[in-house]
Image 1: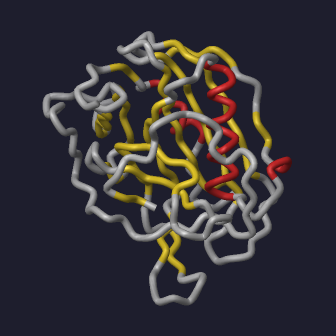
Image 2: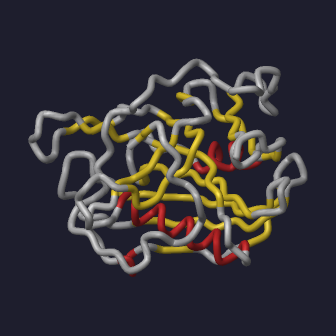
Image 3: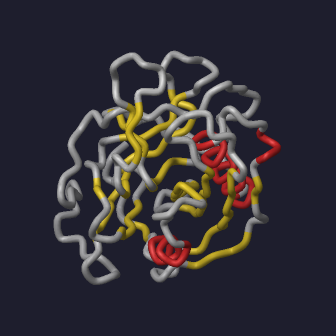
Length: 244
């Protein structure tokens, strides 16, 4: 679900203690992605030739995505609904998102006449204000996104989360990296798939933790390759925070 609002105020494991009987239900974007909107960073250059730059002035980050990705404006937030509440409120989200094939799967699972669009993959940055341990935060992020995006109708114990490891991007930014998977997801609806996520938690220029997160459908014919995910991750870098 992509909305023109900020729902990434902290990096806590917001899925903790919640239950759900249905998978996350994406809906159409509230804004149209532009070719490569970068806010005030019009002179930003990609580290990988031919790729697009994604800038998040609120959390002071930039990264690159392949040319076929759709990049939304920095003020746009993307989130997955909390199905347990059933009121459209967010379970987990990030801002300044980029999506691969935003209408990769289209369905009207609840037959209300409103089409639900599921992207093949999505990525963005969120704050982790209040976090004190990068390893713990990265594990929380990776696990919560895997469950929230793909497996809210499954037990949380089915999510497979890796141990945190130190990682340094091309720019020299060092932080904690964790991957997670939602395997063997019960396919109750047309767009249900297994899922995979990766979370990289680091300190931004204000000294606070932020997390870059990517989620993608797993075990599908046009699955986003892990090599491409690693290339995107390698470009994560810090820029000046210009929004409060």
